[in-house]
Image 1 (cartoon, one colour):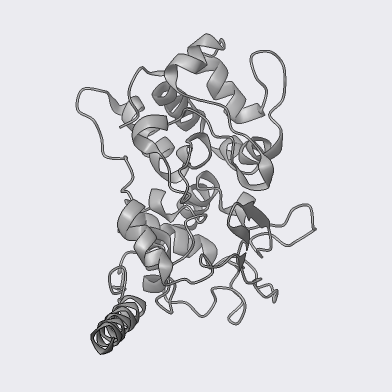
Image 2 (cartoon, one colour):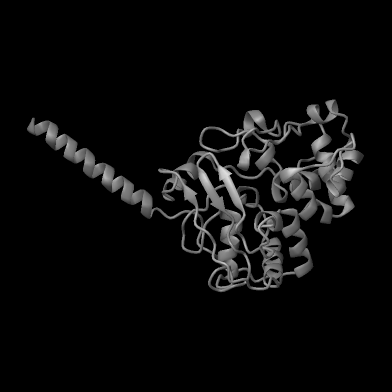
Length: 299
């Protein structure tokens, strides 16, 4: 009996030490300064492409641009987009550029905790220092709004942020934005946007029980489990062809929200067009359409 007790005690001690080590385990890379000069116009363009306005503005609630508060209902609880204005207390006005870069590319807060992957930082990991400098310059022009960010309302054990370290170790994948030889400039620009900034796979790829994308088997095959109960259709090559899309009609839809059948995008995709892709250049919309319409595996 005494031996069993000692074994149990030893196991409890090991578990406690392991948990403490996990909680203390740092993630990401230490923030490093970026010396490049940012361009506000380029940064604003990239912010539009990346969906910052749509995700961080409570449009239906009358919220100010980028002041946060948009509710995202997930199978694990509710998340609220944070305030990204220059308010020093409630927004990012007290951040450094290096902290901003770490948050965008690594999903790590200035305090060192992990952001929930509803924030699409996995798609931004390959943003260059110049792109980060441009984004930072653009965000510095946003008027401060003293609206506190609302804390997540997540279920146990997902509400324990240290657990996100395990999630990252198991499921965090790099973006597929590297150019592919022989595919051409337009195709590769489309790949850079689709697999990176515009993060199409975030909505149009199925997810597993842990909320991670099934990228190897369901890339662009659609999803039935978007926040708020919405669904995203498949946008893989075969499905787009079958439904009558081509490069011209897809590029047109990304500008206007109008499909080849004359219908209009609704829900989340309508917002993506209204606050994001409609602001892109015709060349970039054509690049996105070219990449999606091509027969490839998405990798």
